[in-house]
Image (cartoon, rainbow, N blue to C red; front, top):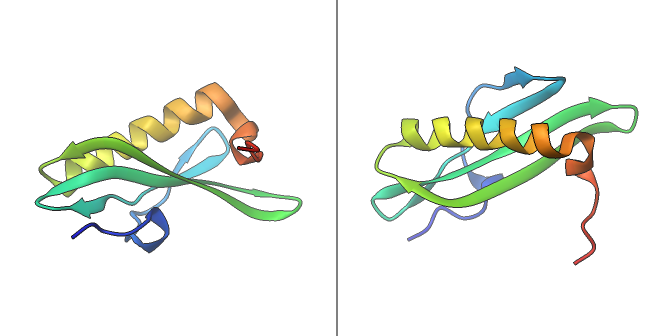
Length: 89
């Protein structure tokens, strides 16, 4: 049974990075853990969050948390505040 979406996962302590706060929130996926988390930033319009889930799975929660922190830093470096903009799919 899967762990649901990122909003249902237990979050790690927040990690500050370039004005954002990153939360790892790995999801249980069978006997493994899926890389997932949130990128958050407090702005004039309140707290904004961007959840993300990746296909990467790991045998331990710690490994999935490390992945989530790496991926979140990469997303921030590539997209910055644009991460909160609607993608209009």
